[in-house]
Length: 347
Image (tube, rainbow, N blue to C red):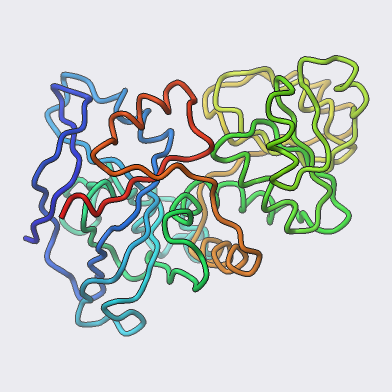
């Protein structure tokens, strides 16, 4: 086994503590990645909150990271030591089902192997995430980091970025499209940047005017206060695509009402149960959809697009030793817009 260091919680505490970790020896198609920067996702917070005292396992979060190839397996020819790379929240899939064959490994019928908390398809071990100095991953789920992209600010693209990129692509957003982004957090600010770069006329819907200046700085042309009935009525049936990134439970009806005839509300932020009135869909032939993560072709295309357009996340970079502070602040939504951990202090 390979030895490294990371930040780990166990069944007795949700506080992450520095610990020695073991990684598998390289298989022929594996890459050992020195993790330099790892984003802090709401999923990490939820995973820690779900880690109860009855759990006898361990949890190492982190599923959006960038780094440098440290070593490659005997069958790897497309990467070499020293190459800058990126890894997202999926590290394996069955590779044979219809979804995998279509390049949608994120929807693998056997369920994809997640970067942490997943089950390795060969040895049955539980995957430990990117809050560590080294990660061993198949070359199939390792992506070249395009030149010109800041490695730290790119890390969140591997989860938040591809999560909003897939529906923007699937719904054909481009010049002539009108897009609204509901919520301006980790997902939302990237949705604004990407929709604008795709050529869409983009607006932000938020609860108050507080973020209007920030939204326009990200490229939004319009800003609608969701609590202002007159403003919401003024854009009724207006947007071809509404990207809903609000993470808390909320009523979808106001966002369906501002969706245009034959338009789509893509509900990404809150993954719990929702209630939808059929009439809100019927009037205007409106569609409700969702999406999650991205397959290999989509992730690679997203990185290329972001490099071409200079898109990265707006981040606050912290030494990894402040990971618990970052999670506490994330729980209070005290971040603009994504925390990223500098893992070099694990050396």
